[in-house]
Length: 213
Ligand SMILES: C[S@@+](CC[C@H](N)C(=O)[O-])C[C@H]1O[C@@H](n2cnc3c(N)ncnc32)[C@H](O)[C@@H]1O
Image (cartoon, rainbow, N blue to C red):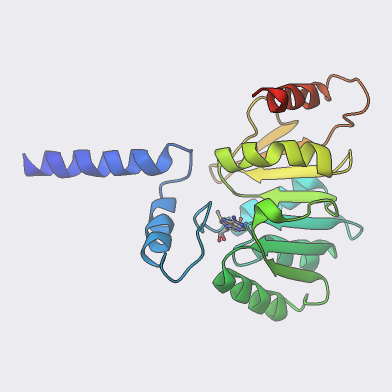
């Protein structure tokens, strides 16, 4: 009987952590961030690194080249910016609110020999200027993606590529979705909102949602 209760509790806890679609192993990271909350900044997303094969596929789907500026919002240990710089010669910027992550990321950039191409900023992603990005990468949460969506559509140049690990952007449907090792990756191109086109319909939807009280 007590085994049944224990199992039911575990399932309930897991359901809480996975309601946003985050993988179960995020529960560990979330618990870790909760216990160190007194010494750490408030996180909008727990720290869960993207596995390297998924990082590789994200950058491949974005078609990164040496001419790109890649911004990773919530950059963790810096693996996405470091890979963009090392494998593709791109300029890359990582933004994370947690100083511990920034320190790790800077060490990783040094170890990979790409310090000259990569910059890590300790910053709130909601206050980060996105305008410089030609490629935007994210492994955040569905609600955070949706909060960023109006800014992605207005602050980024048309043609900017956006890649998200796991989470989509609601009725802004991705152009491509791929799976690597059971992980989903979505890809979008920022449409030109000043020109009527099927792709730009999302701009109207977002604008009318914003104008509602
Ligand atoms: C799921 S991890 C992704 C790490 C990395 N991008 C990757 O894919 O391996 C999310 C990251 O966002 C950071 N984060 C959470 N809230 C943030 C905020 N408001 N501003 C900036 N970074 C934030 C966390 O510290 C964490 O490192």
